[in-house]
Image 1 (cartoon, rainbow, N blue to C red):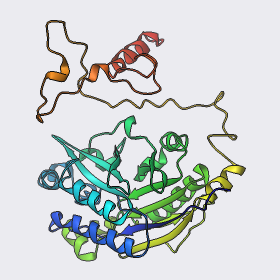
Image 2 (image 1 turned 90 degrees about the horizontal axis):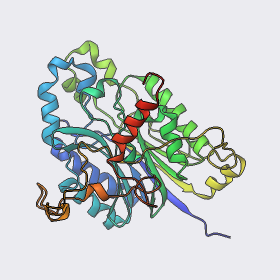
Image 3 (image 1 turned 90 degrees about the vertical axis):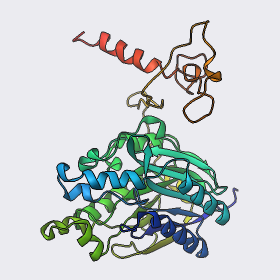
Image 4 (image 1 turned 180 degrees about the vertical axis):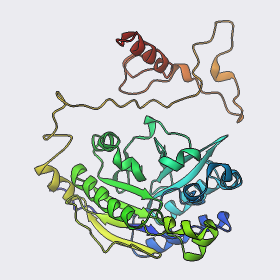
Length: 368
């Protein structure tokens, strides 16, 4: 019989530092140390917690968002960079798997990114929210299918989605099909009102049941003073209250500890990973309960690159000898395989095949 696998998890509900965004990282590191002191080996922080979720975008018209949007650019996280180095060191020091939400800056675009740090400090996954929700589309770019991945970590197979990605059943199924054991869910908190928290509870408990996995959900929190500063118009401040439901759910859909609906704190619970098999014995959505010959998912896991290159002419230097703008050899992108996709020998397809696939689809369509 396999050895019992018990993992203590912590879901963190705290406020960012809206006045001094550079100090939000310190709050993360303090919470990590607090959770470690309580025996946690897996910890989840709220959506885009560093430096802060762009609450302004929900209550301000686009014409008024310029200054705040640029301020977010100024404090956003570059991956890798000082923020990831600090969190990596904390994960390694405490032997903890950390899931952190950040506003990632990649040159001229911001992304809603989820970072999973393994217990040895390595960055196991960086993924970007595939479709920002409603007001968020003014703030962030779109992610791609490369981030819809489940990774092996010191505590088990971990996947993550942000906020209303949980309302995309195909995105959830993609993680389920990769045999997710622990799911990290992240929401902004202090938004929309009580209905947001009610919907969130239904959503995360349903995913736990359907995926037969544990769900560790973290939401942010804003004090009344922070709400007043972020939303000068008093009549709109109700839109920045409520919406908090920090919780840990078992594969049987059961809440393992009292959820945190207001204020700051940690939700701590022990996850017995034997419950994953117990649930799947009855209903495995991607195994004996699936009908792939009737219903299946097509997942394009290739990174969406703005430029793809074809093999250079023979009179040019190989791509690997040219320097990139970061002083490192430029990647040989035209010859990089992607596992599981046809087109580049037995191992996968070239990224440049994406455009060809799209053209072929147009030619095959009735309209063509």
